Length: 306
Image 1 (cartoon, rainbow, N blue to C red):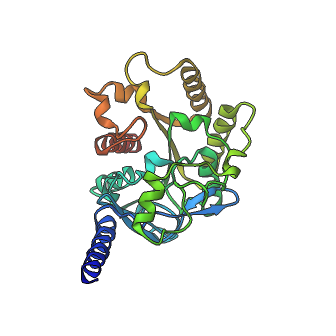
Image 2 (cartoon, helix red, strand yellow):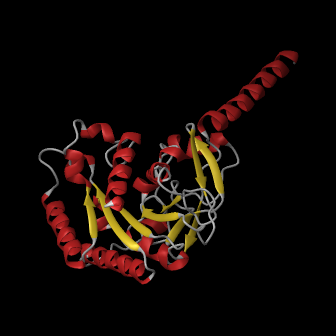
């Protein structure tokens, strides 16, 4: 009997230590949560702080991956609003200080007081970003930067269905870190029936997204805000054979659109191709690492200073 009690005690202690380790070392049990929105689709829930694999993540009161801000900037402060998806957000693999917005703010702050706000979420497209602007405004930013990747030109309409149904968009925190590890890495994913029922969008989606980019430019102009568009490539677009035929055509459509609308546009495909080792800029097939974020922030800064 005593032996059984000892074994039970050892197992309990091991489980408790394991729970503590999963939380403190990896951040399991405290994932970022999401909220649904009728127009935006979904946002990161406001006022969150966590660490994932040692990387600090902070979400402010406006669902930005930024520190707390005031609605109105302080006098003489340069304020920039970055809109984007997981490229801008940085995800769990990027520490708060190493996001594109934080790097840009740190560099520009050497010239003058600067705030760079990061309104972004995984898999957002232009229509999510426009809806965010329409809900919250520009926060009196002098510059709005729309940071896309190639796939965003094919982004579908906003939907809130993934929130609480897709394991990547939880709407509440698990009771235990063990539960998150099980759900995220060990349990076989089974798509929620409602997610499988989302109808595929028909028509010229690229045209809809180009039109939305134009609406973001118009919104910025109406608020006396400069507008800058930038787009990063997928890793497979780098080098030879380069983008696929449909991507080449879509890229040309975007280029023609920016010229017609007189939009300042940074295409990072030739910039990445000009580096010695483009693969060293990537975390995976689409997302950037610190080196990639540094290059993007430097090019955005160069464009803003011209």
